[in-house]
Length: 106
Image (cartoon, rainbow, N blue to C red; front, side, top):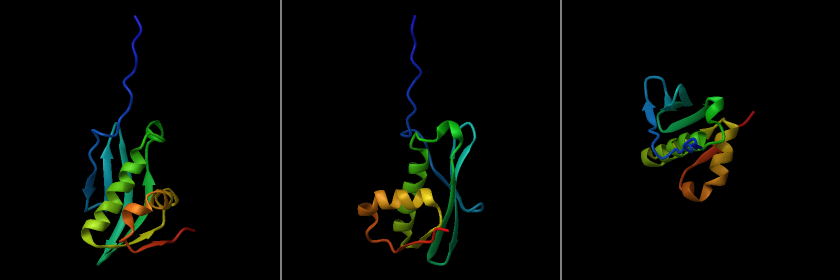
């Protein structure tokens, strides 16, 4: 009998804003995180970290979407220091035209 592993889907994943740690978090077997710093009306998106087994499956994109949507809702300016999130923003710029985004990539 042949069985197929169920395809991974991000639809059931929940992103939690852990304000104390300044991270957006998705709990899988371990945590996928997007680290940020929020000061006043500015959010700095610092880094995303997705466990290797979940990379390339949309988990990082879900974190990015949540972070940029949060900035929209809260009317925050965005400083993006993460290359992955900068690419996410550029690929989805039509959704975030009203945001003031500065890319600060080293």
